[in-house]
Length: 172
Image (cartoon, rainbow, N blue to C red; front, side, top):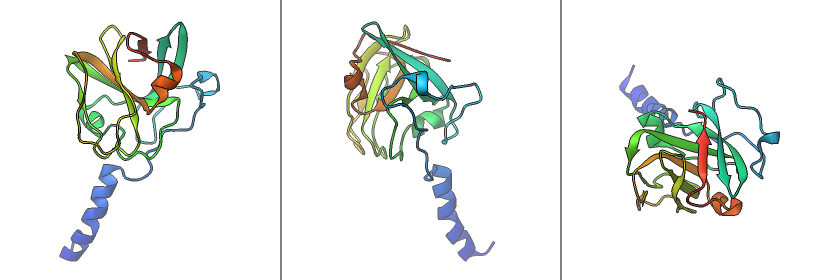
């Protein structure tokens, strides 16, 4: 391949590798009810290529149903929801850890505000960082070691009355 062609193709390859093409989550029901949601199967994957799993948050005796992308690998977790331009109200991303640890997230290259929900190993919510600031390099940290982190559209937790102590369950 000629030097010029390599120089012209390389930036395009990098953009494709970073997934800068559309990575938006699939459309869903705005009130978080799964009754109108498309059923999630073991073969369901997001446009970003991540497995889709059902997730329920139980708050004050009410179940809030979501379909979330499972960010299982280090690479998937490092990328998270970066470069996304929207996140439907009944969608999100779950970051399960192989062991409990202090979680530290930032919003670099994240275009939309998120609620970052820190989940203990028993499934209870430890804390919620609400409406995090897009593109911020300020760390968003858990207050104690957690087993997972859930990201939802910014403001969604408050809208649904989700609080620390509520229960999060998902298909693992």
